Image (cartoon, rainbow, N blue to C red; front, top):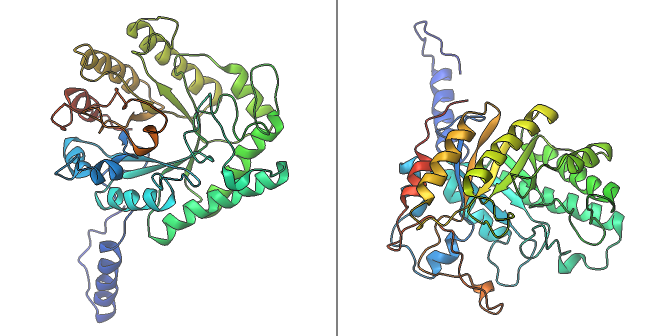
Length: 357
């Protein structure tokens, strides 16, 4: 913003304009403390409303984390999960709260009724039986619906993910891909139509294509996406450096180094920024603070790395969401809160960064 330093002349018309502007800005959700494009110190807090329903917090978690330095919130949205959590209404409720706390916002659209990830990309129940053209239209309409719902509330997300962890495509089997084969035209078209729909609602929104395994080189993926017309503004990566069983028993030091190298390579090859859209570690392990500090230092040193989001740090005490119970799943064990329900030292390390871009 450019300021006029000349002596102001206050006419009645200017006074009314100033008055009306103040009213507008007071009710505007998208005013944030951190400018667009600055380093994102974020957290995915999609379980927060359900945890609050279960009386896991006696304080405002978003406000507390903002005081620690958090400037961005990531929220997933499912098409229609039977519990109602992480559906559009739940996402909107949390988005309003985050925006009122001055948080920048990332919307993570799964295009599924439950978690979408490299092993699961299930077509929503309401879209079952759709052929490829119908699924294209469903992706477009769902993207428009989610983002227009936010726009109608005066909320302007900075980023949107078209799919979650999609190295193997989305909306299986129609859009399933792998390194050597698959319907690349279909999957790339799903991302492209989601991209165009997002830009139709917010012309300046940053569209992310998100894959897992930040340490893993996947030149074949991005080459196939580009060759088949896929679209993105930013690459999103997941990084879980302490999950050695997932990662070929590599040490966390190896994982962090490989992730740094890969981020630099992606930026160089595709001329776009990279966001660490998910990070997680065993936060109550004494090593975790060292792991986080090392990775934050590495990521901060990369000019076109846009920031880091911790995935569901608010989990603690063995809490598990409603949908986990019939599946027999345990609670998420990589939250970054203490057993007393407060942000841990791991979160302090992540949120204390003062990097400016």
